[in-house]
Length: 281
Length: 333
Image (cartoon, rainbow over all chains, first blue to last red; front, side, top):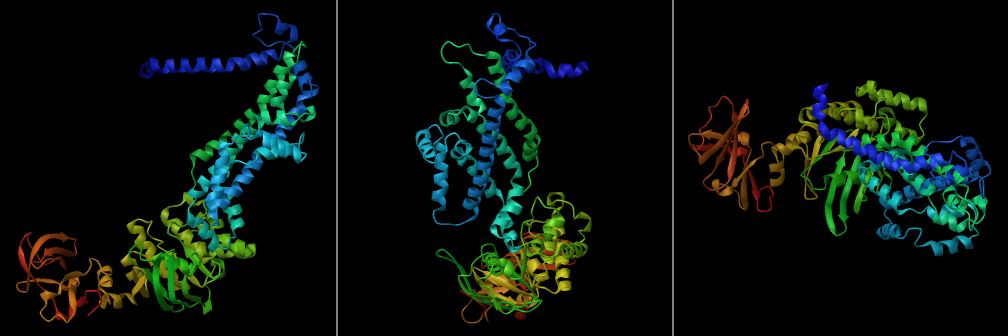
């Protein structure tokens, strides 16, 4: 045993010490938010701020979930969930199909279309937000799920990722399917899609979080509190003027906002890692 | 099963002519090997028969019907690919059943046909495995099984053995031959390996630069090559090519004299040569020599004949009936 410790040396312990300090450093604000969500308003305002959880946990969370400040947090979470899932699935479906078209079909302007899609990478939502707002408003999609989801669905990144993956699939596989009698969509459905499932899982994680964390776009197009998403809803909870901020409820909302992305990451982790470990080609 | 006929087949990629016109009539049940160096157009020719490449000019008939404009699945063919092209996410059973499933074959019949093919190919124990859990030879068998279950009129093989190690290749070669004999299905087999061509073919098509230099039974092609290319490509070690001036009675227009290594003998008199080195292979010995007129030659002799020393001056002789003369264009004289 002593030998093992010696072999590891001081570097081993120093590394762990460094990592633990880093972890605590990052975790501390989250801990503070959690503590703040379990105490009462006067306790937060009175310095020094408490560092251990109080007894208001159920009270604060019940208040946040079912009444909230502008809208119940449960409703905002549902809105966020619909938006995040809509964006993730929409992006995956559209980019799978467009990558399939670009890789497997020879049509005039194929390269042009690819580069056009690729170009949109340089135009994030924030850059094209005014014209996009105009379009969405003209379609009458303000304060609606379609208005929240549709403008964010087109995705160059995911298209590019699937294109790269499809290009590593041997041509002979497509030819074998053709000899077997599979029409293009059948090949896509029976062979390409199952082969991309680990890529799809990985993308789903990334895109769900991307959708969940959208802030500027929902802030712009939802004026009705019942359509607020949770991430922008937190900001809406801050009072304007001299009103007192209800910090315990805001902090409870923050903690609640973190939970779904964490669940997605943890539950998809296995599939994600399996995708990286066994390559099936 | 079916006959296959190719009439004046040409293929052009953009401005590049890849195949310059191939005519061949393939009998029902015949095993045809298309052999040639890489880039000679042999795979392109096979892919045109499969329907994976369009035909620029000419006509392909399978079973008497023109198939130029038919999709691969409507040509009644099955193909075995070089890297097997097995669907990685499907079990062996599903891989073999996929074509039948698409064709809408009843489930019971699919199971019956797949099991039959699996028994034939000794794959019965592996039906539930994924391709990645199989060895190279087993994957090769699955690829053949996928072709067999469809009961096609024509088998197409695109260098199916080139990914296997040497020993397995010999074994699979025998299996393919036996299988083809047993099923009696017309087969086209592409390879760059002249040994495979010699051993498998009923007839072979030797291709060179997009042309069929010679079409014939293996031994006939070996004994009577029509061009210098065929003479050099078929046979291992390859035929020796010497300047034709060595022979005083060379025919008019001949530029090259070809003699196969087994027809050369080291003798006490004849054409002088110098031994460069010898390779003893056990049953036989290859003696490499250079000639004063320029050029090198290989003599293949029985191992019981003593080895000449390196650098020794020797004489070569051969029978007049074992000579081949070729002109400047490489055609037989």
